[in-house]
Length: 70
Length: 520
Image 1 (cartoon, one colour):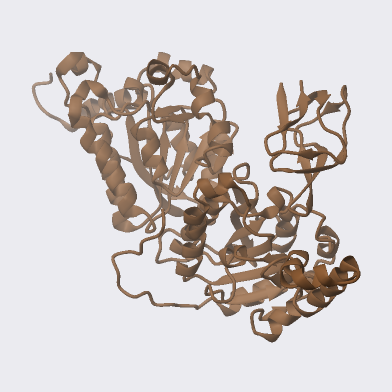
Image 2 (cartoon, chains in turn yellow, blue):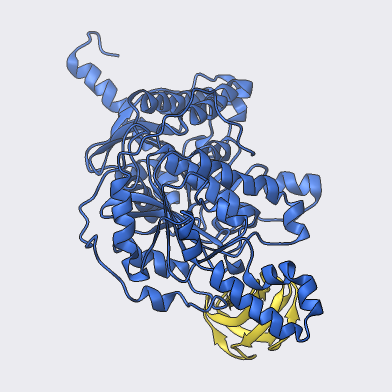
């Protein structure tokens, strides 16, 4: 089990995966806007997306668990 | 015992001792290592050096300890192999701990042997490589062993900045076998089989009650991602040895020499129009700075260090027209490329390493500023950020900075700009060299006017355009000589190589002082 955390506070621009999707390590799963920059957030491990805990447009805090990969 | 000493009798005696030394902890212990996927200390050294060049020293040195049954356990060599040989035809010294002999523990003689080879390396000024595989000091020998241990630290420090020192962690290491590497220039760790910790899980459990495995506490993942200790992670013993050879190829033998120049097959005048596509002119879009670096430097020459630690800054060696350079670059896809405590530490130490070993610095800048927040301030970003300022200002090697996009605020100084002693300051036409990003600047300068305006948004937009046109560009900076040249992105490689070439003979005398007082 691996969590994809927000590396910094920001706004979710895009969610690129849904629960049940298979992902590989370092695959882009989210786009986070922070410090006036849109940054790709990648999967921390390979596996299946168990849950997506954020949606487009949502403000998140640094450290928030955005996606859980099983 | 033969009645008379003959050549033959003494040769036989030597052969018997050599055989015993070469067997280390014995064939069973060797077999056990092989089953664990590990090489023996001798096999590691054989791979490290060019074939048939390794010369072993003090093979017959053995422990003088007699207490606690140690007399019966001694083996010629005392659990460490020291010597010298060639790596890519250049002289290199090495020591390799043999974990099959008393766990590779650092006994008095073991420590003296390592000190001996370090002295030799420093005497002739050639790099030294340590292959660590040891639980630390040999407690059976009491306090005696500490002299060797302390001697290692003393020599690591004495050799720092004079000869390159590389440490490879090739087994579970603790105590002296982690602090000595910490004092050297590079640490390579083997994934899965090497760990580094000051106190092990047992002690931690008894003192703090925390339950942790040695791998969770100090495995390659921890040190390459969390602590920033391990510059390189290798998959196997063989990979680890190869990565040491690769590293040495970028480095001079000592601080008085230049790194070896290799014949480059990449055209120094090669232009690259894809750089304009890789780096979006829309500043809100991030991109992977590594794509820029790998296209600009000699093909296949970029050798990143600490790639998974403080990913908002990139450091590593590369070659430009065959010449070693040190790369320091902001990484916009991580923390927007902001500087913070860990990235400052990572970059500052690398800058000083390059400066110590005559390696010119090329800085790729796209930095929005320091990462804001209470956490960063409490973590001491003032002190840690100051290390980068100090390191760049102190460095006398050629320093070339390229502004790609954002050159915002105080972080600009930390990436080496005019005033910080940069030798050549280049910028792309889309770069913005400003104190603040335009919107923030306009909101501050025209706060009252915006409030008073009939249509505040229209007024703000108009002022943003005016400010952008006047200041947020490299032309304003170039008119004030804060930028030496504005270059086309496609010309980045030839422009940097020409600047490097021009600076080749740069010399800046340092005034005598014991040493500066870098904020540590």
